[in-house]
Image (cartoon, rainbow, N blue to C red; front, top):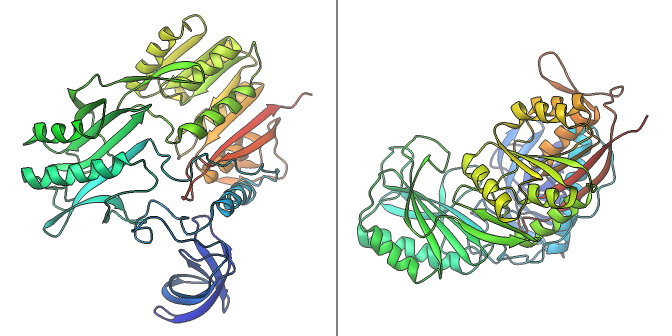
Length: 463
């Protein structure tokens, strides 16, 4: 098999990124947008040993599960991977993805519950984040292509509500009228590099990320936004660093309060431009309520990576005492205000710091606590996992948006993975930490994409 060969292949499986997998002449071929049971013409783009990567040219036998994508740029944009697949098989794929990740990465065999569906298959996202760049002499606003920083021009995205289309049109019109340029990563030129919008129960926080502190015609942009959003706050965020990080440290509020209150699961909380909030409100509610149900009244709960404090407050309200550990000062401040608004001063403690630095002290004082890990995609810091294993809390609850790091972290917590002196993780047949998995429940927080949120629970085995 050589590069540029055109082969007729049959897809017999789906990979972790949602791509089709075919086999030919002892080579495994990964083919984006091909589904199991399909047959088609494939051009080989790259070969490496017994692995190859191909591009689907033409389908001769389509799968019954195939549907027409709603998005006009689906096959070029890197935001979605599964719009061509009916929704029920998407849920099956995500259940199997979690199962296989646990087995292959973590050495864990445990029955995974069927993935919980999202109430909305489209229009579910409450956050829009768009890069603004240049393509030749033209400005481009859209999403990055898969595994690149090439922006695919986008006028609308079906994963977002209708306000996203109006916002994109307003941004493009503003740039044209005021002679502003998108950011060129190669030259560092251009005034505008991202726009980020967060919706909180019909209220919006708009952040325009810029490379200069003053933007010509900004009042005109606010005028356009007035016609889109009934109530909103507007920030300019300054970021001139040569980095992939979207937001800089410097925010200037030009309109609105900057923070908005919401009520969810009986808790009134507050969020700002840099506060983490799950993007799918309905699924978040069900996930958090199930997580809280795993703890018992009278427990002390330590919520690690606690964000703005919503989940911490839910645990505090039920159990009577909960700590939240969060490194982002803005989010920690939101959690403090949440505590006061909800009358939880006596049972909720918010700590601004790193989990790996704060957790040991709390667990030394709070014996038999329930520890909750809700980390970013990179997973739980390994030092924090060692602290938890050494302290032996009676229960560990994990919420993960990445099956691979979930499998790794659960492997460490259960002892199916052992760390060598060089820091390498290897599978272990003999190890054991005294923790047993009691629940693995995926939730479809991100329909039409390869991503899945998973709730897991471990309990300390009684001797």
